[in-house]
Image (tube, rainbow over all chains, first blue to last red; front, side, top):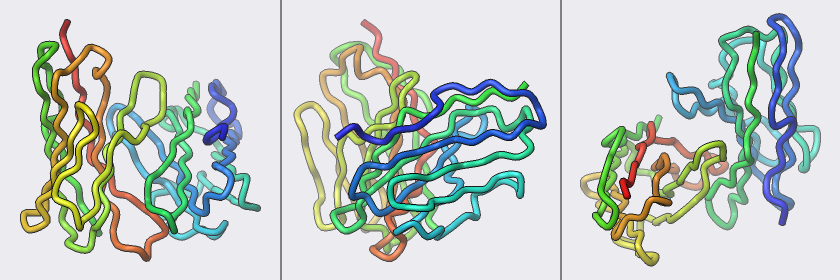
Length: 114
Length: 114
């Protein structure tokens, strides 16, 4: 299996622009997680889905952040408008909850907002 | 909700020595405890896990112990090598009803000196 795929790997944008991060989970997995990682705050869970339905979005920092999972093989995390403090590495992870709770992480998207 | 505390935040050992990282959790309903290793520029990857019906698990140089009564679990790395240098995260997962959500510790940066 190719593992969790994230795109883009790197994104540099200017403050106020819209940013869309993409994730393709491992085929057959039924849960998907979006995390943000910074030196100051560590690894933060933003939102997670189960069977394409958002379960808990309490970690989403502001209304500027939104996430969708239109089908089992694709999810997006959107920031609109972006701000410099959104600069971080964003990880997507997936798991198959019936077999266990191991999460498989993608390589991350490194976002820099100028 | 679940709270996971991880210690120490940084650990430096000489090659060949052992390293121990400890975590405590708060919710007695947690029943799955994975450990992840994150190398520079990559996403966290599972290295070992333990379930609540097991007290200890070993995989070559890595072992994990779990004390359910005290609500703590530990990662033990023996005969450390420079390639063990990374950030290690512990996590706890609550029961079977939360779609596989895990609560992560803040991470331990392990440095193995040659």
